[in-house]
Length: 253
Ligand code: SF4
Image 1: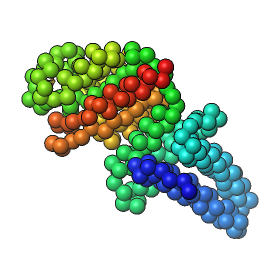
Image 2 (image 1 turned 90 degrees about the vertical axis):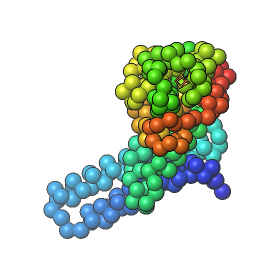
Image 3 (image 1 turned 90 degrees about the horizontal axis):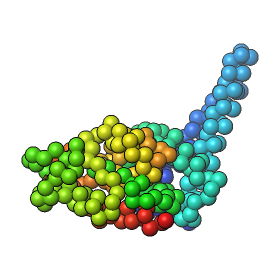
Image 4 (image 1 turned 30 degrees about the horizontal axis):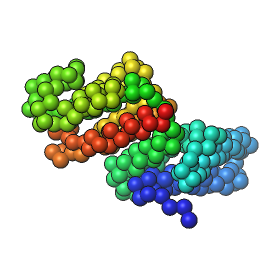
C-alpha cells in the first residue's frame, strides 16, 4: 500500500480529489450533451468536453508521476516536468477543495511546502555556495533592534537577541548569499540580481507558498518560521534546518 508521511498526504489527497472532481464534472457535461440540444450547442459542449478531457488527462499523468516519484523516492526524467506542472496547476484547485472541506489554509500550504521540499531533494540540485541564496524574513529581527539589517546584514551586531546574528554566521561560514527581506518584492529583486541556482527561503506558509509558485522552475526550498509572538513579529527559525538545507545543495556536487 502507498503510504506517505502525514505532512505530505494532505496535499496529495487534495490533488487526487481535484482530479477526481474534474473527471466527475466532465462526465456530467458529457451526459448533458447527450440530451436534446441544437446542433451548434452540442458541438460546443462536445468540443469543450474533449478539451477539458485532454487537460485533465495531462494533469492526471502529472499526479500519477508525483505519486510514483514520492513512492519510489527517485525522479523519472519523463515524469518530472509533468509532476511539477500538476502540482503548480492544481494548487489553487486543491486549496479551494480544502477550504470547502473546512481544512485550514495554513495546513494545506504547509503540506504543499513539504511536497515541494521532497521533490527538490529528489531532484538532486547541484550548486556552489555562491549560487545559493538564503532569504530570511525581516520579522526574524528583534522588534526593538535599531540596526537596519535589510539593507546590509553586516549592520547586525550579533548581540544574541534574535536569529539574524546566526544568519550572519551562516553567511560567513558557508559563503552563501544571505538577504534579509521585507517581503516578496524584495525577495524577487535579490533573485533577479543574483540569479541563484537554488534558494532557501524562511517564511510563513502564505509567503513561502507564493514564493515557491512564483519562482518556479527555480528550486525554492521552504523552511517555516515559528511565530511565538504572533505573525510578523519576533519570529523564530531553527537555524540547523537552514544549515542542513545548504549542505544538501552543496554536498550533492
Ligand atoms: S542579533 Fe543583530 S539584528 Fe538581532 S537584535 Fe541583535 S543586533 Fe539586532
